[in-house]
Length: 429
Image (tube, rainbow, N blue to C red; front, top):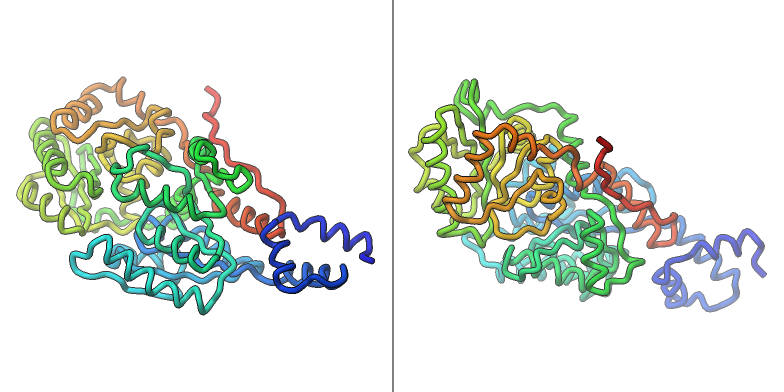
């Protein structure tokens, strides 16, 4: 017979996955053997393999990877596909994480099929060798989808960080909307950044017990980098470029904006600097040839438009802080900019981040030159309109997402209580 203490410990084993694992491993004997197996599981670290490959993944996963590395209850393994080779190498040192595996999949002008097949074939042997208890992926990249698929093929549970975002248009953004929907079908743990994202999952009949509203870990990273106080934007611009000028920060890289939409944006920026002599445009250009070729052809000789290589993350954070307004198709910047109370004009026709729209600090402006110019001009000339777009709070996180995610993983394996959900509340007036 088990003691009262033993029965209490056994009752704490709330995870169905953990319970079934004991029985599958032969713990079918007496209660003492079952209890002994349970106690061993409580001491054994949880082996988590995290898969990443792009700059946003490194930024958003680094707080979680650091938290696991500092917790004796976890063994953390990090695999990088290096999908964004030139844009991530410096980030690892900055964010104090280091890949255990570098798959180095990058090839010239690689296709989505190339990324998928190379990543899958190189990840599978790592899963076979380490047999992790959990595979963690973030967001909606091809690396994330392949990480989830490889884990599923090995019957390993999947944790999806930043789950539940939906544009409800399978082709916008492409292929991200399809990737995140497919990851949701494969995931066992769903870390939704907001209540709205969790609601999307519930509408798709995802098990409510597997959904945790964590907040977005990008805010954890933003706070971490801000605390480092590494101002460096001046290293990337001509001396005095921003003195007595208003700056527009521009980023654009999504596949649905390649071609005519990107040319429309370039024409709009050219028109804006001609209209406003006090304006400077800072545009870190994505390294994708479909982006950099178009942008440099259209804007390469324009005065007061600074075409830069992708900025180191601290410099990008500083650029967001110093910008007068931001034009972007980046999901991460939509999440980060409200922290600095900067108006964001989203160079897209849809967004899977409606919370920013609801604060009033983010606005969809489509992909047409005239509308881009109109919306930017309004903010540059109307102080009242500008004040209305300075979000009073950030709906995406409070800087404690990694803490909630760690707690939820422990809960999944029967080692902790379920964490409280993040709820974004607008501060009282």
